[in-house]
Length: 407
Image 1 (tube, rainbow, N blue to C red):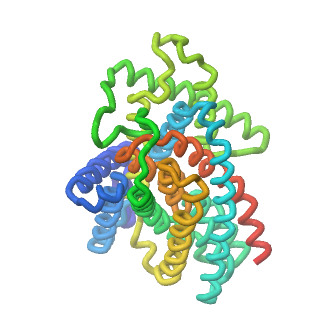
Image 2: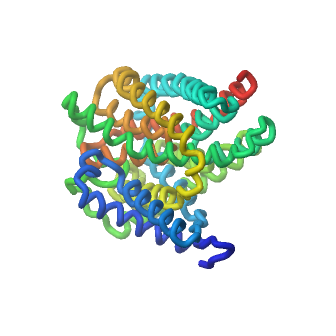
Image 3: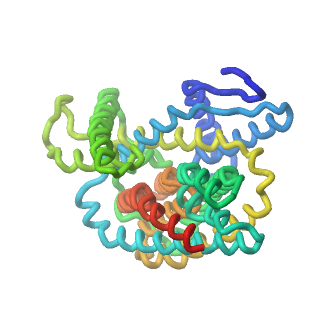
């Protein structure tokens, strides 16, 4: 940790430690603030926003910016999605076939709408069309990664010199709105329609707020870690194989599929080297998923440099207000009815709230917070990751160039 040219740089190990502290801060905030509990605001969101505001105040008072090396955070994302794959089954995929198709269709159409909204707001402020796309699927449904990837090209080819700043600003505020949207939407639907889960199975992520997560022994926990590492090794091989074929996906996607493959190829009663069953949907796997996701999101939010976004506030807030309103309406009036008006549909809406303006981890954190309060939804944890962790990137790769050339 050192200060150079007015920047305090935090190394990976300390950044991960601060992420854990932020997660505990979020837990304490949720315990003290009834509003946060009532609307299932994820703990890492509460703590992460609190610390990012604190770092912004420090910058305003001292002129010292805080920057984090987030290498450890990226590993946690791979850990998390590997657990999602391990907790999935072919039966779930078959059950989720029709809902998956419906959600995917809605998402693709919504992506078109999101870009059209961005273009409309850009025209309203007499800005280039490319700026509108930066406030569309480039940064919102695409997230920070897509924004960072496309901004240099938009800056060079379309004369938007501050493309990176606009993209990151939209992605950052979108992430905040997405984190705050999912829980309230799900609660509204669950209460309004008196919805309850169909089963009382172990949660995919975390343990219930009422407890009862089961006793986790040291060997149970270690066996889950071993299963995750084996799946990640297979995922790395898949990743390298796909890369050789010209298809480069984020590492967490092949690791998710590797976990799914191993779960469905290893017989349930087959004792592995550890002498234990494959740890799909066990309390230890749910605990690891919760730790990985929570710490990842806490580190993502605490590292936001809010002070860098002030100059872009006017157009961006207008754009985000429009995007938020449309996303909310589509969630309640399109996603929920078409997904069947069930408890699973309400949890999917929490996830779609995360997808629509934020990122895949935000969607998962929203659903995790809801299911920890109300009950498990295996269907939601199967179809939402497949849509937002795989298909969205493929669709965006086609939509962004199309809109850039046509508008």
